[in-house]
Image 1 (cartoon, rainbow, N blue to C red):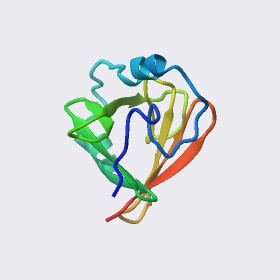
Image 2: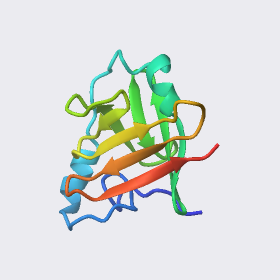
Image 3: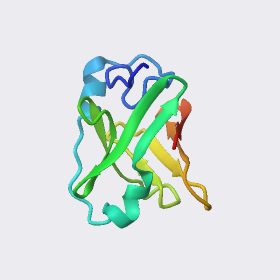
Image 4: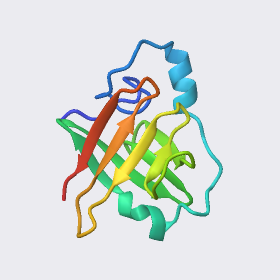
Length: 128
């Protein structure tokens, strides 16, 4: 199974992006945000888990008051709440990529829609 590669795209390698200088991608992907008191178990842990797009996978997890996507033992990107987007599951990273977590009202499952700054979108589904 192929794992997610931070170098392939700021966020997820299934995205189709326009060429961009690698240094610019690395700088924004490494952005860190201050602790956010709203990022706590009751709010964000429902988004935790593994998400798949075909054979690629990423993991979403919380460390303290910070939310991450990527590989817990490898490259990862910190997410912050996206005030400009509606919904409790709206986040963005330092590159301007948005992450919209969609959860079913009646149980497990869910997915995340990832939209790159150039408009490329991908859906990553959580498996139970």
